[in-house]
Amino acid sequence: MSTDPHKTPYAPSVLEFKSSTFSVPVLVLSSDDLVAIEQQLQEKISLAPEFFRNSPLVLDLQELNKKGYDIDFAVLADIVRKSGLLPIGVRGGNVQQNKQALELLIPVYSIHSSGVSADTQKQKTIMPTPEPVTDSASTTLITQPIRSGQRIYSSGDLIILAQVSAGAEIMAEGNIHVYSTLRGRALAGVQGNTEARIFCSDLQAELISIAGNYKISEDLDETVRKKPVQIYLQNQTLIIKDIA
Image (cartoon, rainbow, N blue to C red; front, side):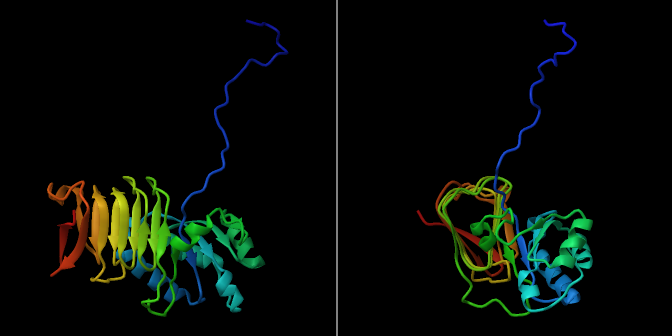
């Protein structure tokens, strides 16, 4: 071993920076009415509180600023935090809004570099607008596996062509189709659509829910486990039907 005091002993690295993409929900605002925003945000969260609890959130102000509206970002961030969400970024803000965000230690992203992939932006947008959801809501198609910790939200039907891992959460205002193993949590008809259904090729879910009616893994009959099934609501009761 060297005893030269001018030589620095070798120390293994204890950290490493890596490039990665995370699925983060994006809150798109189209009104500066803070009262309405808080009310509709609470209504959204009440439909699936476990899904939204302590969820990170990027605030998108682009549409709001395009319409010439103004909003106090500090007040908005406070509303979001009181709702149990964690604002981790803002994009599309003006100079004043960006300044307020940085004062609150919330990063500012550009529209084209938000840290959220394009596919995720479509899947994870929450729209607190006064207009009702219509039948024209788009279908979200995902071809890659949903990993543990990921949260996916679709304003229409959600189609997944790969497995959903344990610890993942998928939500849709319409139907959910999983053409592989369904673990984790699946919530269909989250806006109260009692006609929504869940289809999967291999049922191993931690929780399934339609329009707020749910069953956890312990409630699933062994006759439907690890089989292709469809799940629908009948007289406020979840029916799980083997479709093999």
